[in-house]
Image 1: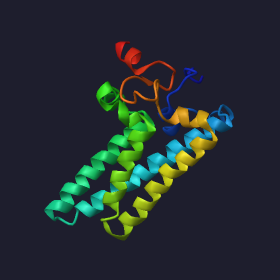
Image 2 (image 1 turned 90 degrees about the vertical axis):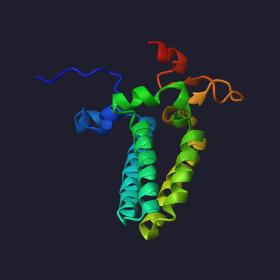
Image 3 (image 1 turned 60 degrees about the vertical axis):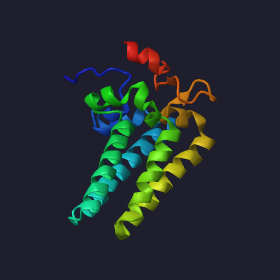
Length: 181
């Protein structure tokens, strides 16, 4: 007998394969498939960026080690944000202090900084820097064409002039009300 799963599963459950493959594909609309594809591609890019940074850090030069570890931590943080998992990391990241990480602007800035550092990490780093930039520009391009999937990937500020105050979560609640529960 199969266990009954809740209907609203977090995106990480799809990535971790909690649903059988047949149900994963049949339950997704084209908008959800596109969102899942970008989440999966982002997760893969961040994992490979971490590998590139750790390879750079393995050269045993102080600045290489320092930059490699910092870029690995930045990519690991963005991997957690992208996958919306694990819960212990999201408990720390899903606060007003780090709310910018869940917006397109925040992710764009972090990805741009990571890419600039990757460009200094040899051929593998250059390739990963280009792929990281291509991914974020691709997400923006698709976001212009399909705003509903863009809003599913990123939190949107409630007031466009007030970009640092209150954010809408993926379930429609505001971040402030999500913190109180």
